[in-house]
Amino acid sequence: MRAGVGRDRGQSSVEVALLLPLVAVLLLAVVQVGLVVRDQVLVVHAAREAAREAAVDPAEGAARDAAVAATALSPARLEVSVDGRGDPGSRVAVAVTYASPTLVPLVGRLLGDVTVTARATM
Image (tube, rainbow, N blue to C red):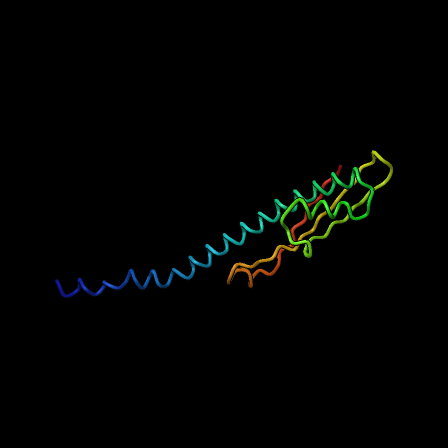
């Protein structure tokens, strides 16, 4: 009866060794999703700030400058378009698009950059 007890001694170590890479990749994916969600929130904030600025300042680059100044997003990856600018008091719609980089190891290479957009009207 005692001869069969020692045969399963390393089974749990093998199971952990097999599952640990999968768990690590899943955790990295969760971190990457969190970073993309953070960028989405920042893009929404940038769109609101750009719409506010476009509503009061008729200068061409004022909306983009406000969007860049409002967040820590990379200005090179940020696109701002303004529609509907007319007489004072008219509605101005601003669309902000950002190419969110996926820099988390392993997961980032699988996904590629994610495009995040937001619109705001003032």
